[in-house]
Amino acid sequence: MPAEVHYHDYLQLDKILNAQSPESDKRNLSAHDEMLFIIIHQAYELWFKQLHHEADSVVSILSKPSLNDNSPELQTVVHRLNRCVTILRVLVHQIDIMETMTPMDFLDFRDLLRPASGFQSWQFKELEAKLGLKFEQRHGKEHYTAQLRPEHVTIIKRAESGNSLLQLVNNWLERMPLAPSWPLQKEEGKKSFWDNYRNLYGDSLADAEKDNIAAFDELFGHDDPQRMLSAAACRAALFIMLYRGYPLLQLPFQLLNCLLEIDEQLSSWRYRHMNMVHRMIGTRIGTGGSSGKDYLKAAADKHYIFKEIAQLNSFLIERRKLPALPPAVEKKLGFETD
Image (cartoon, rainbow, N blue to C red; front, side, top):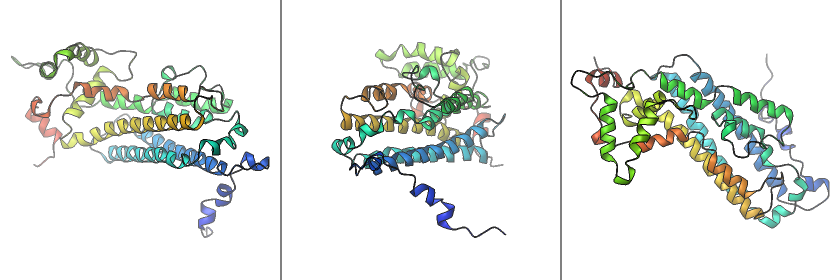
């Protein structure tokens, strides 16, 4: 029979509570806030581990060859992505605690940390890769693994070579059964869905926005190897956004919205981190040798993972002007009552 479980042993508190070894203590220097600095970063890494746990489970579900859009599995995907969003909000708010440390408090131990740096957080880089940030899209890509240990570089490269969450979402959107194709087969004397929608979209544009029609035709009519989402996936995603009020499309819309929330929270975290670094060290370089605030700002501006989904909002029109769907399609998108 298994031994009784005890709170202390289950959480391995001996390991956790003795995992803080301030460099200032080793040198008999006074640096009260180094303990806070260590615990905050350890908490970050634990939350990164949980984010990996959630992302891996979502990737596993979406990797299946077919996924019922009205199934418990899709509900699980949305639930776990929402959990990721909530965790990321916590990571942003942890900066509030870090900012109780003043620049002079940080200087008490900052130089003792060289060349250690948050730039060496391989878990965060691996998470970005799992979500869909490609090597080619990274700011400072020639240096982003330079300070990592070889075994950690291997982990990140493995994540980059696997199917990312964004790639799997693209595949899922492409096989969405009810999204109109391009061009949709026309009935005699009638326009296709997308011909009709394109006209309505064009009519909604201000004079200064008329060039958006060319962008519409390019995005939804042609694949671009530079983009992560195919034209078919973009059409399906836009269709979900437009008709999300139908029961069958509510979960797919929540999934897309979760991805946008993840990007928003990651961006908030990067900008809060950047501003905190500027407050703490001004224009000095980081302990790992980066350009400090300037590097963090460039990465924050560039590292939007799901920006192609966000860009689809440029092609929405007012709900009351949406084309009416065929009765057969409406029935499939709603609850069966007979």
